[in-house]
Amino acid sequence: MQLFALGINHHTAPLAVREKVAFLPEQLPQALNDLLRAKPVREAAILSTCNRTELYCAAEQPAMVADWLAGYHALPVEKISPYLYTFPQRDAVRHLFRVASGLDSMVLGEPQILGQMKQAERGAGEAGTLGTLLSKLFQRSFAVAKEVRSTTAIGANTVSMAAAAVRLSARIFESLSDQRILFIGAGEMIELCAAHFASQSPKQITIANRTLERAEALAARFQADTMRLDEIAGRLSQFDIVVSCTGSELPIIGLGMVERALKARRHRPVVMVDLAVPRDIEAEVAELGDVFLYTLDDLGQIVETGLESRQAAVVEAEAIIDAGVSSFLHWVDSRVAVPTIRALRDNAERARRRELEHAQKMLARGDDPALVLEALSHGLTNKLMHAPTNALNQAEGTERSDLAQLIARIYHLHPGE
Image 1 (cartoon, rainbow, N blue to C red):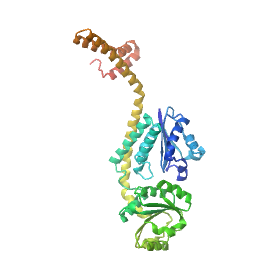
Image 2 (spheres, helix red, strand yellow):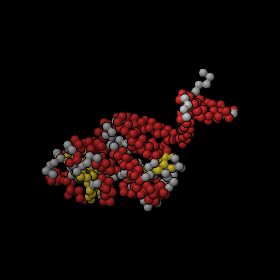
Image 3 (tube, rainbow, N blue to C red):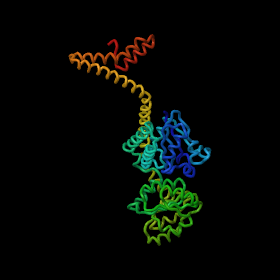
Image 4 (cartoon, rainbow, N blue to C red):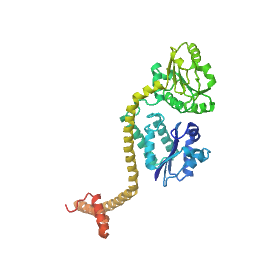
């Protein structure tokens, strides 16, 4: 069987497309079994998160499952095909290892994806669609990810703007789990920030957006609330951290709005992170004593401090992954010989039993035990040597020479020495 992977992720498709092919947890058992019935697939697992939907399959002949994926979600295949990627065996293995290690994540090195992959592996196992090949692949991916995280600095230094925003907020508040966070916008940058802040388990997450449907789609992934942009002025005082990134040409949060919010908050501090260009928050807000306003330039300084070590960690991680891919594919190749090895051992076992039965009969009739052991050893030797000796005797020309070299290699022989 051959492995292959088909998927769509944050590198290839926007949220509006990704959400159309996502699977709810309760859908997965039926979807997995439907996939095995609909396509020539022997094993299958589905990884579905807010950033990716990927299908890992094993089949006698690599099969394209794009039609099945589109059909399952009642979509024309041409609607999603421009965003899909398909990996044959070696590339599929390498991709899965990179995903498990956090190298393919929106947040480089983030650990949440490993837990999501373990859940996907358990789900496929419970659905009965996880066979020997995919089971071994997932277990190897977990081992590779563990090595990457324990021997490199892939998760030690922040490199994204979102991670820097979390770090800056943590400087102001002792615990982010006690804070209420407002995200303004629903694009990829806000999605990335929400992923980072959500990992800190804040008290509340709210997403405000001009289009409420987009806000609700993003909020569903982080168990967040939503609001319209025109509600911000009346509710701004409720939030301890505000992260904004929209395409507005004019500021969304002005000086007067923040002053009123601070008065309602009794001047409790608030962190504001403006990731927009042009800016969403008036620059004068930074002059207010209880506001900590950070812009892209501020976050960029933090990002630069960890960039060099993170790049070195990626190189180290890729080397670990390459070694893991080679090791796994060697195991896959070795499985071709499994039936032959099993047949060889079965043949040897039959010979052993026959000789043992013969020896037991000799002992039962009172023969000398020493002679019985001698006969047993000769009988085993003759039976085990019969097949290779007979093959050599019957071979001719170059075939005999090649066979002699092969037997010498198998038995570690050194003829002529």
